Image 1 (cartoon, helix red, strand yellow):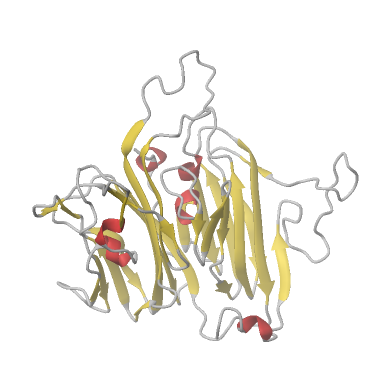
Image 2 (tube, rainbow, N blue to C red):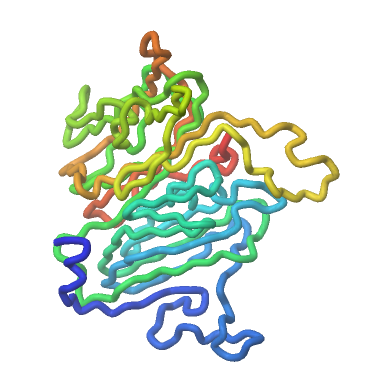
Length: 372
């Protein structure tokens, strides 16, 4: 089965879409809302998100397959710059009480740190300016519910979204449920591996990693290996990488040299691997309005170095039968020797499993999620 060849085979799909103008996705009920331009003329493009409320944006009876998600929202207000970390996306499958997807909205779409960056990959695409797209296929048997919880310190007036899906006579044979889980450790512990996910249950396929790393120490940060403990592994894993930049498909610290021979890390996006974001400048106060008289950036705009990277295991899924734990070492190199590091690490792990319920891991408080 190929990405382009599969669309030539008829699968008895019934295309539907949920938007603010057709919140139920019913047939023949789209674009009905009116405006000053007249009936059926773009009357409801967005919805409000009340503060501290988990708003249902899609409630679908199956069997069906979610094929595409598109969303966008302002990434700052006068009350703060981290809306992308303040909004929580959750997806529930087949009436399970624990969401299979739970993540800050930005991080789910490979936009960590509460800031926009363009991403050009196969399953996740972020286009100017802040157009968040997911093409992960998400089949389910009975029911799907997608919610957005607003933990920003004010109501948001305009949240835009589209959920494209297909009703089917029955879910594909042996289909699994999509999962994604955010995690963060604000300061890692030396010689203790950071855990992206711990002891998730199979059978299933691990299909992707997003890493939002804020370095708290100087020098090269990417000597640590990703480790995959599967199906009863204890002391040592079955699968590992040779280093962090190697896991994300790069080499030699992503170095590119300028005309004077000075190296710098080069960003890139490919269908399955990418390093779309790096910055040591705080741009969150650019064009930020509080009504105060002091100048923007009166306190400076320097920031800790931040790095956003993704890898999709769509061509090489990590298969597990009973259990899987994924870890990352924090090891650096100062051009003299390797050394153990303490950094601020946040991740999203993506996988498919036969169970519809998530792990039950609780989302940390807003204060614990705020970028540095």
